Amino acid sequence: MSHASNTNNTNKQAVTVIGLGPMGRAMAAAYLKAGYAVTVWNRTTAKADELVAQGAVRAATPAEALAANELVVLSLTDYDACHAVLDGATAALAGRVLVNLTSDTPEKARAAAQWADGHGARYLTGGVQVPPPLIGQEGAATFYSGPREVFETHRAALEVLTAADYRGTDPGLAQVYYQALMAMFWSSMTGYLHAVALMRANGITAEEFRPHALKAADVSYFIGEMGARLDVDRHNTGADRLAMDAASADHVVHTLKDAGLDTEVPAALASFFHRGVAAGHGEGSFTGLISVLERPAG
Image (tube, rainbow, N blue to C red; front, side):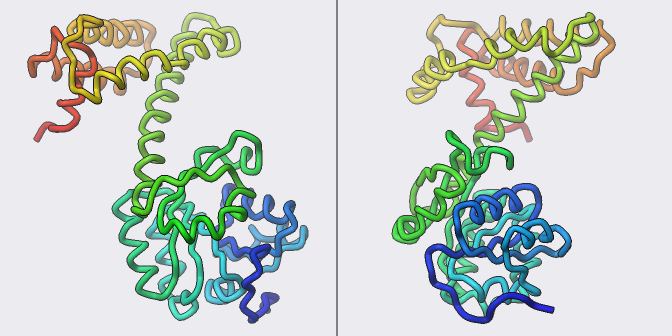
C-alpha cells in the first residue's frame, strides 16, 4: 500500500530520491538529517526500510515518487537503469526538476536532457566526486551542468549533499569532468594495487608502504608542468624522454613478473609507451603520448 502523498510538493525543503544503492541511501539520509521531507523509491523495496524508519516516505511506484516533489534526485547504476525506471512514468515528469547523479557517458547525459525536456521536465546532470560515506561531509563536491537558472534555484538543496561545482549549460559537461577524474582515479588505484602486491610479495605490509604511496600519489608538480606543455602542444622540452619512460615501464613489468604477479595492465601501459616511441615521440616528453591517444590504433 502506498504511503506517499498525491499532492504536488513544491516546497524547496522537500525532495524525492529514486535509487537506493549505497549512494542513494547516503543522499536520502543527508536530506533527512537536514530536515527535508524525503520521498524515496527503489525497485527492491526493503532498501527503503531504514530510511522510512528515519522519517522518509516510501512511494509505491516511480510515478508516485515523481508526483510527490518538484525536485527529484536520481541515483542509479547507469542511464539505461534510469530509463527502465522512468519510461513507464513519463506522464508524471511535467514540472519536475530531474537531478541525475547517475554515472554514464556525456553523450547519454545530453540525450537524457533532451528526453526529459520533451516530457516537460527540467534537467541537471551531476557527477559526484566522493564515495557514499563522504556525502554531507566537508570537502565533498559534485560537478553539475545544465540550465544555469535551474541550478541556481536548487543550489541550496544540492549543497546539502556536497559542494556544488557548476561547469556550464551543456548537460554533458558534468560527466566529461567526472569521467576524466575516473580515468585518473582507476589508473591510479590499479597502480596502487600493483604496488601493494609487490610489497606483499617482498614481506612488506600496505601500512608500512602507506607513507611512500601517499608521497607518490601527489602528482601536482607533474600535472602543473605537463599541463602547461599540453595546452601549447610543445613536447620537445628536454625535461624527459619518452624512450626512457618506456624503459622504466618495462622495468615495472619485469619486476612484477619476477615476483610472480599478474602483469596484464602494466604490460598494456608499457606497450602504449612503445607505440609512442614507434610513432616518433621517443626523444620528446612523455606528454607527446597525447597524440597517440587522440589518434587511436585501428
